[in-house]
Every structure is written in C-alpha cells, then in structure tokens.
Length: 125
Image 1 (cartoon, rainbow, N blue to C red):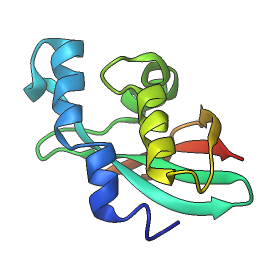
Image 2 (cartoon, helix red, strand yellow):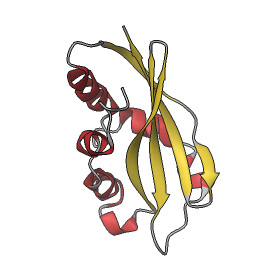
Image 3 (cartoon, helix red, strand yellow):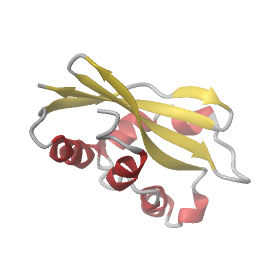
C-alpha cells in the first residue's frame, strides 16, 4: 500500500491548493489561513488504511490549538475539503485490490507548535 499511496499520489489526491480554497471559502481570502494542509499515509492495519491530514503552520502565522481542535467535524462536512470525495478517489486508486467501506476523522493531535494532525481512517474490505 505504501507504493500505491506515494507522496506524488497523495499530492494528487489532496492538492496543496485545497487549503487556499478552504480559506477562501471560510474567510473570503486565502491569505487569512494559518496553515497549509497535506495528506500523509500512515500505513495499513488489518482492514483499515490510516491517513493523516497534516496542518503545517504558515510563516508568520500561529497554529493555535483553538484553531484546530474543532476541525475534524468541520473537515468532515466541508465541501472544499470533501472527505467523502477524497475517500471515493482512494477507492478508485485501490483499483479493485480492496473497496472502501467507510471513513472516520479522529481528534486533532498537536505534534508540535508548527504541526497538528487529524487522523483519517478508511475501512476497506
């Protein structure tokens, strides 16, 4: 699965400009965003694919916990972030090797002052 979810594939699944689109929709200006968002593959355990949405602090901004702790609920339903569509794209990338049967966003983790992560678990069969 690591080969399937290479850095290049992850950038295609969740392009860097999606963060700007999210902040444009949220604030009316992409420059107001405090972080960039990227997708990382954390591995497979049984019938679960483990991904993380990584929130990287933008230069000159503050990645405060109060900005990120409510994000799993927001990301789960926001049309620009489009987790449902992301999981559909993951399912397409699996090309019949497995089928996505569900997904869940976990709680925000503060890895460091400049990096917070949100786990995305995708169930497969």
